Image 1: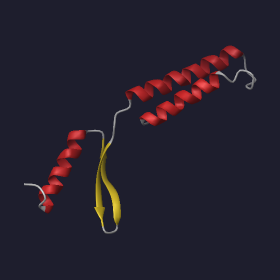
Image 2 (image 1 turned 90 degrees about the horizontal axis):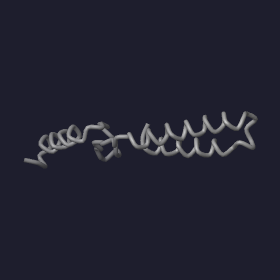
Image 3 (image 1 turned 30 degrees about the vertical axis):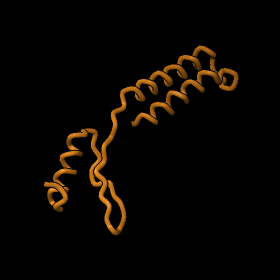
Image 4 (image 1 turned 90 degrees about the vertical axis):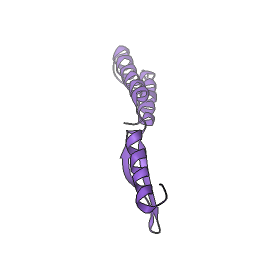
Length: 89
């Protein structure tokens, strides 16, 4: 799950915790569940790592050839492609 997903989950949990008038459950249950979901969402948003993509553009369009969380791996692929097509030395 990416950072946006964690943020959305956190917001949904916080909103759920405020819905005590609309959900036919005891108030404490609604608060505990809503705040638990909010904390999980916040934790996911904080712990999310960025993704790096190697995007190739051709006459037929653009495509993500590789998606990785390792920035150095993506850089090595770009460098190898540059050497293969002669744009890097």
